[in-house]
Structures are given as C-alpha cells and as structure tokens.
Image 1 (cartoon, rainbow, N blue to C red):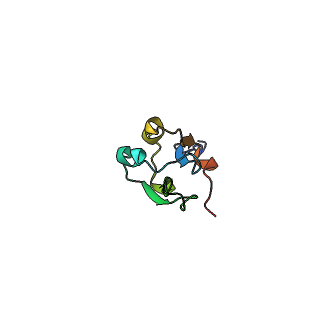
Image 2 (image 1 turned 90 degrees about the vertical axis):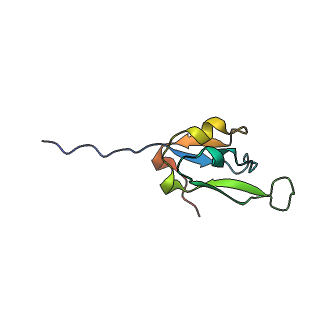
Length: 86
C-alpha cells in the first residue's frame, strides 16, 4: 500500500498593507480571531494610522475576510506561497 500524498493545506489570507486602510471589517467577520491591527507603513498620516495583519498559523482559509474587504486588500494564497515575515 502506497503512502498517502501529503496534504497541501487550505489557502491562507494575505493582506496587502499598501491597500489596507485598517477599517476592521475583516476583523469583525473572522471566525477564529486571527486578524489584528498594527501600526501601518504610513503611521505619520492621520488617515492611515494602522493596517490589519493576519496570524497565519491561526488562519483557517475560510475566505470571509477576502469577500468582505471593501478595498480588495486581502488575497487567498496557497499555504506554500504565504510570505514569511522578515
């Protein structure tokens, strides 16, 4: 009997910080509470003080955040393509 093929895993949500406005819509719909806010790349600008970030290990790939984001700042990517934080 052959060994089963390794599971590829569910897609993961990735937020583009250049498009995220920190509106928190994604935070409100996340069923596993894996999205939070942090200081954004333009923190000195009063309009863009924060962006949302995703705790990748907690993300279950449900697609809800991508569907509700009014700024199209969230994409679902295969787990092997999730960027590793520097």
